[in-house]
Length: 69
Ligand SMILES: [Zn+2]
Ligand SMILES: [Zn+2]
Image (cartoon, rainbow, N blue to C red; front, side):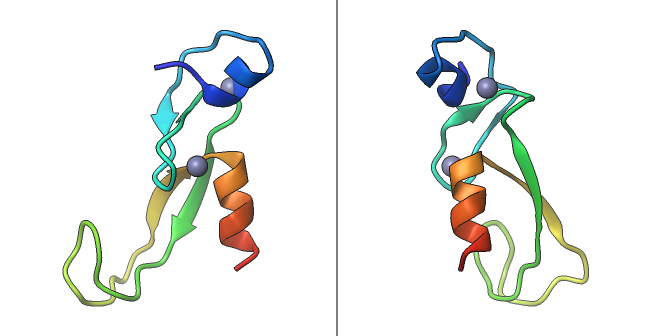
């Protein structure tokens, strides 16, 4: 998988992660790691609050959308 953002900019970088929201591939430069606290049940855990946050991989546009909620 290639980095989608790099591809848009005409570069050819291997993706190191996939955005959990939109699924696009992102390289080390473009991946954004966000600690997301799980409050409701949902993938991949049952419905209870976890004491720890989960690191989640997001692409820059999805992180922006997440933060602007
Ligand atoms: Zn990239
Ligand atoms: Zn995304």
